Image 1 (cartoon, helix red, strand yellow):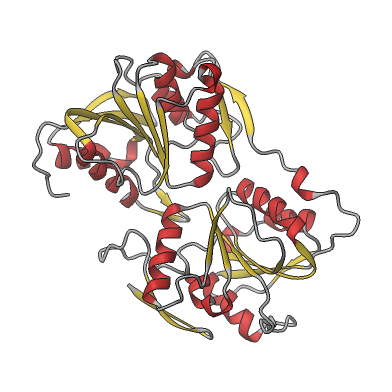
Image 2: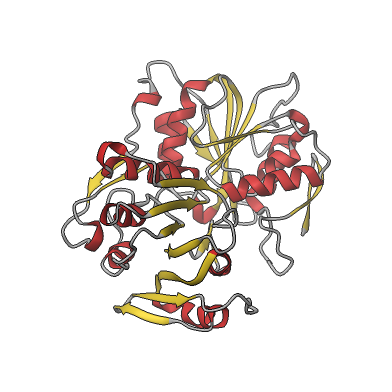
Length: 400
């Protein structure tokens, strides 16, 4: 836990799930820069007038640092991340904020009717930024103050072009501590209705080289990795996933667009599939992908969960977990998420149940799986990727 001191107060903040061993902070220099600007201004841009109860919307707040600092102004937070939302709730409670001080929305929810101040933490995905700016554009007005923030490495010419194309004239601040601000002046007159101009969701059909997924339709909302094509790792996984599920309860963990779980469901109509991801966009994509490929859009053998991996599932309730774990948390490279997924999987698997993992070879996950499960087998490999299998053989957990 670390303390963030801002012109709006000082707060103890953590990421979610809270881990005392985690050295990553729940904010960065871009959050600090943005909050200083709101209070004192930057360069020739004066401070932002927050008197008179303006409607403040915060898009992409990583771990709730911005809305926790601004809780007295009753902002709205819009996030695609269940983990970010959970961190926000914990940080607000720790700060002693009113339970209803911040309205928490997801990227799938309808935005506020009117936005007077729009604060944007630039996401890693340019597509997600485009999608959300298009959704929010009809709710800003000529007087809306729009300020974006990000680390220098996160802000590119394409980022500024999106703000300019969708909202209006855009320029950036000088860099401070490797962070930069984006100033955008809404200029809405004569612009086409933005909400109707977005390309999302995108749909494509998997080719015959996609293994169990050949011929299936994938549906991708903005922000999903490789939204317009099948990525090579998932392709390799589909070529090697088990085909003898025989009515099993199967989890597509970190499901993305859900094509892996859908491939299992199409091959085995008796299988019960649980799609889970921490991204609201991902689970919406998985639901759409499953519906596009099941006869009549049947959903009676599928469950869709936005959450922290499989933490919400009962112990010993699953036969098979299929997992394509991420190794980034925003811009930070880390295996913490994958290791948590593996530990959670072991808890929810029945004795004899299996965890199958697709991963970049260099991540060395076989070592972690052996420590946790007592075994790890290479199912398939190629120069970049490896498919691993671990079997739950006993109930006694092994230390990580």
